[in-house]
Image 1 (cartoon, rainbow, N blue to C red):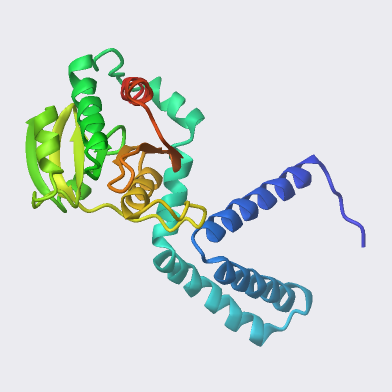
Image 2 (tube, one colour):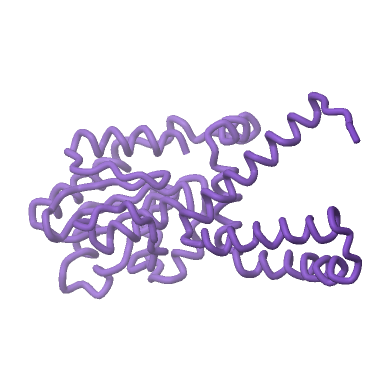
Length: 257
């Protein structure tokens, strides 16, 4: 039996294919690919049983499993769903649309905010003092700040260096910069499980990558082993930065928040 196949059907198929592709990519990144394939096989079996073979009893049982399974999937993949929705909302075109309706802070960031960060990082780099500094941008990091100690101090080079001094009780955690102030120190960050992170990069780099994946924050890392300065932003690393490069990145990204 023939049926009409028009432009709307082509668009429908393309949209479903794109949705399946993005879900596949998300599951692959979160190491849940086998679960995704299992769900896909179950859905295909359910469609064959209920729509093609029209097996009423087995079809009704599978219908109940599907209706209950949706809730179970939301609970099981809540972190992946949150990450997917964040990625959707953080898309550059979406951000540009949002900025049309929100007040911009452009022009409010000056050298007094950026230079103490740069100078502290360069000083710690020379002394091979490990450091992890997170600059809050659009996404509020209050939940991360609660894992450490609230400081609420102006950005100062000596204060940052003292926080990350090897005998300091706060040196192992991250410093959170919010609204051009040091908001908290000793904070715990989510660790990234990306498989393509170079093995020579340690836990600080994985934590920086984690917060850059979960939010739009900018994370600065000073390696304790090599003294090299890196930045994690939007799930990507910029490695082996000079003082000028770090200043340029901070100036650009803090003006864009």
